Length: 398
Image (cartoon, rainbow, N blue to C red; front, side, top):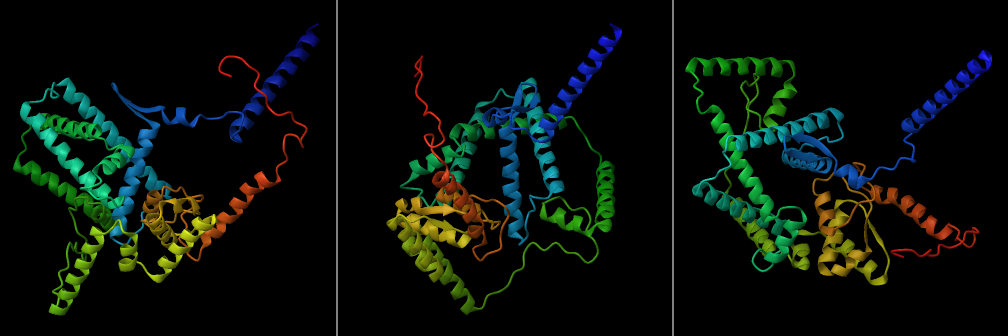
């Protein structure tokens, strides 16, 4: 009897071990038996500070906003922000998370201290700042979406609503910024600092910067680029903010003519022909015709990089119906590539950081289209596979 019990115990142990191995295999191989609900995952709370919460989607949006800002900032200096670098993204993510937590803590403290009880003067200031920010947002949207600020205000407001910049959201942001400022002012209202303490703190920052920059000169360049206060400048380096060059009379006249031409283009930005005639080359004009022809003949046209997407946008401005013929192959690393795709309301099939030129993105996308079409062209029907077609079984809701 004892032998039988020992045998059963070993058998159960083996079954438990096999079950454990199966679970581990499923986890490590990303078993498809467990399907993640993207909507539920996006709504999952990942930061909680008191009653204030941030979902995964909100945090990811903040991280993407910071990536977009850094990309634009670096591009101004002819540099590329490497969002594929794990260390860079880890640091950026930490900064975003710390910023969100700090903001929530300060807002909670402001409410705890009763600083959210606003005076009439503060309420008036909030409304003024809200109106000012909305005006700035409308001007930016008018430029980005090629809309006239005076005659197409409703369309501009609708665009802002789509991307989350409603009047309510802007007012909430302005109000929270005021509360944070009041909380910070409250925290230091009784703090006094002597001149000796100021000098000592400044000297310590100088020494820390000196140690950092002399061991890694690139740290100095990054500090300047990121707008960090620079307390020490390595020998031989200068921070040049402006280089002023005096134009000759001939050059001044040329600059004036160019500026006038650009102003005229801006006033006629809804007229694709004028824009293309003043700013586009023959290549863009020809490609524009290809997209228009594709729409006319019912032939899909695969856009490659930034230039062909600009041509596609010109075609859509000429004839909005041409959008049905435009298919985006990939989103290149050109700073404006995503802006053009957004204007076209197109999602790229491939996002792989390509910037090779020569139509490589479109060529890479064609096999993917072929595979997708093969499913429709070559897949057998229910009847061919001996499978009965689905029929409603009745019941509530059927």
